[in-house]
Length: 198
Image (cartoon, rainbow, N blue to C red; front, side):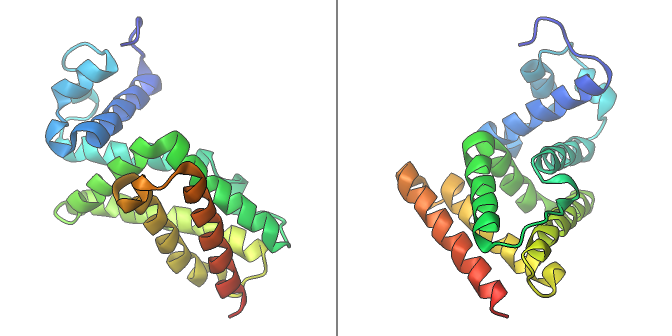
């Protein structure tokens, strides 16, 4: 619990961070405004003041995770890369970093994605965030010279997301770290080879 409660935008970020942690560790049933106040070390009622409804709280989680995703991307998603090995290394490190440093974000994302099937506002936020991330991925693929990178980015992102899901929530959790890293490298290399061959 922070000794000095954050204010303004910092408080909003602290609320979203606490909410993401709760969704990842307790599921959506454990996500309440009061629980977020406690987790963030804020006075009671703080979360309700900034985010009055549950939909607003859930959407704030999605927005905060997108903010983190974009902070980890190359600026504008554009890279002057021409060698497959460079792109392969970049995508592999991005995948490994998402699991190593932000596993809770991935768990929360999957919880929220399922919930979004019943909440149109949340579904819209997740869909828009996914489009933004795919635009960045298209920039990376385009730097490699892959034809129609905007179209290739969609299945590529879905396949990479499957690897993340398996590692944080599926049987892939049982793999040793070195085996997981090798599987990611092989999968990324196969994806890039396949898209480059089109």
